Length: 399
Image 1 (spheres, rainbow, N blue to C red):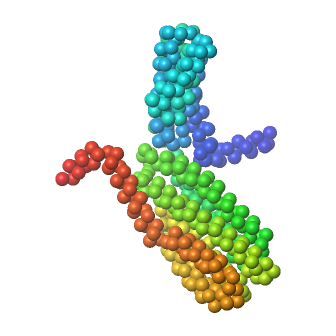
Image 2 (tube, helix red, strand yellow; image 1 turned 90 degrees about the horizontal axis):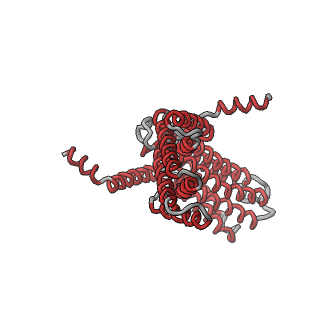
Image 3 (cartoon, rainbow, N blue to C red; image 1 turned 30 degrees about the horizontal axis):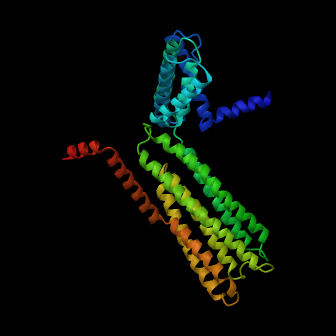
């Protein structure tokens, strides 16, 4: 009993999480849809209305509007197909197969997207009962009631924004990347090349790819949450800041994976001796530490663009990048002076420096600003192409 109470309390604390919000909002909308259907129809148990509302109400307002319209279209198309079949044939194995094939084909032609199976489901349910005409009409009415209740529910109770959760996921991804760089810097201090430990770091670096996929899903949800949401002043800028930030981190993940593999290859060739000479190891540790700080500051800059303290975050990032560039040059000078002692490893040293240069280039503040400007211009150009009449009216009003 005590564990159940703790779970209920924990659920109440997590009302801002997408899963919990979806649970509460869908349950409330389905209940209201059932009450509306009981009041407006003569159906004894109008369960189709709450079912439709349950499916229509999504976490974001944009998804609710788009899926609600397509779902109503899918159900109506299925009912019309079944009504036509019921006037000609009854229910048998061949008529059912023909009905499903026809309904699926019409669903694709009607462009209801992911709700094509629902066209066939609606048609099958209507054909499988008696009094086809009444059943078809009741099914359409229940579906419309459920969809309308679901749409109105999200219009009245505007869904929450998921920008904060997406920002937290970006920061968590950057933290994992930073921790990987810190662990790599610690492995450099070993007296002998730590081959098993570096092999584990390579595995962790590969895991970062899957983490990026989860963050991408979170940002997609945040992008939908700002569309058509009256509480967001600059939805386009917010979406682009998050998306371009993740794109940069994703490229850095690839670089980190390659860098980890280069360290492992170097360790395999220097088994039984230090990974770097005594005078090079401290400089390499400092370089990796500066890179870790730069990744962390970059994530802070991304999330600050959609919250506060953007200028401070940009200043910290600039400091970390400058320190990393100085450290990189110091490491390059030291490695160049030691190349005669380990001539067979010069290509691995060059690969490490090249990977560092790529990461510094991706985290560059000026490059990020240019990328943001390009994306904003692209969005504006796409909008003009999609809405040429609106563009002409705007230009006319300006003149």
